[in-house]
Length: 213
Image 1 (cartoon, rainbow, N blue to C red):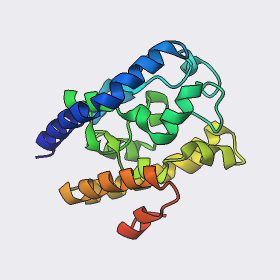
Image 2 (image 1 turned 30 degrees about the vertical axis):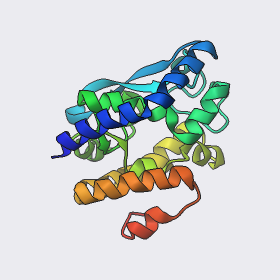
Image 3 (image 1 turned 135 degrees about the vertical axis):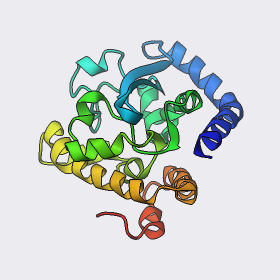
């Protein structure tokens, strides 16, 4: 049922959003470094790698500059148009193509680069790869402003990710693994749209009161 839901909804969403996506593609082609999409390897279900698609928001050579795979607060690699796309999460919409292909689901653990994925414990990794990665999910919602978390930490960006973010993400993904289901997914999709519109909302904690702290 989830496969059918993902395929049908991603196809419908691409058609409905095409009046937004096509002009954005033209804007990106005419600005910045003139790239529309950014594609990068991510870890998917069963540990298989796939190429995640996003709208291009950063310098093309970003993985080899600064903090590499991790975007930090006020990251100088982000292009002017990219700030808006990242703040509104519009840069994630091309992943509807990944869902249509079967690489991803609408809801699941956030797909990470091989380097960042290896920051998880072996136990967490073995659990996470049992699920198809998602466009949104518990970890994505909780850490929707991950860049600010890194910016506010007293640790280096890498140690912050390793020590503060990844253990909490692992707990969040474990919660989803135990509670996943059609109703949970629908609620998480609704909550994602809500917190994009109202970033300071605490709706997540109100709907799922047993989330790990």
